Image 1 (cartoon, rainbow, N blue to C red):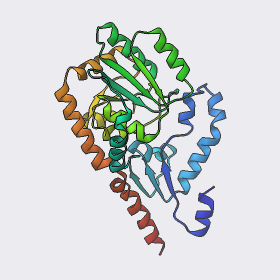
Image 2 (image 1 turned 30 degrees about the vertical axis):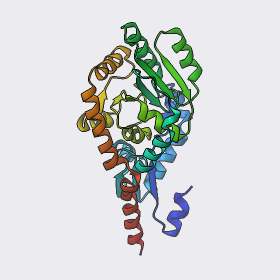
Image 3 (image 1 turned 90 degrees about the vertical axis):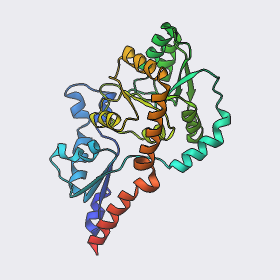
Image 4 (image 1 turned 45 degrees about the vertical axis):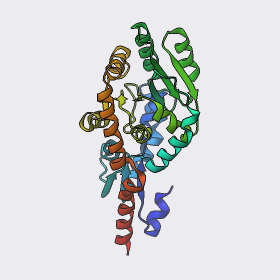
Length: 291
């Protein structure tokens, strides 16, 4: 819809790839042949859109290169992570810190986001149960957010012994305070998740704490290892996740080192006033070519 008038008037058309359709929809409905038919419209539309694009911005290299799956090469493309405003995040966290009461001695492992199909909250709840049964009573799993599976996850938590707190939906400013009061953040995704480097990563890094990543995306998995701001755990494995949490609880120096690295990576790659200049330069170049 946007591409047609742009092409007609000679206006550069840029595609911003932040999510993959219909791949994301298959998390809810994945039936052989049936899903192909139901989602064919989105596949056709995506292919058409990529073919009309003069440039693409992807929120990861994986998303940036998505058009290649359709045998479409877009002339210009850049990767820009969905970041945050680091100065604003810090100000929000400081202002709202008094609203977050963290009892002394508790170790908070925090997830922020949707409580839905793509996110492996059940494994996180089961890992908390494993830790409790191991005698580790300091652990608290903090879940910020809401979603269609919240009641299901609450029921699971009630059945088990782990200490899990459902905070619900909170404003971004209060979320920032919770993340900063936490000890570890969790990027929790199921095996079939199509997400790559999701929007919450910038806030997780800004909090200055190590991150546990269970996302299966090879690009982000490699980034966690190469940059050194966290640890990777195979998705949907409660024992492995519990082991990772235990390892971080036993290594405060390592946690501090990962946290410092997280802040540095956030400043260099996710801070929007700086990182988004790549988009500005891309658009300026396209406009200059039109003159």
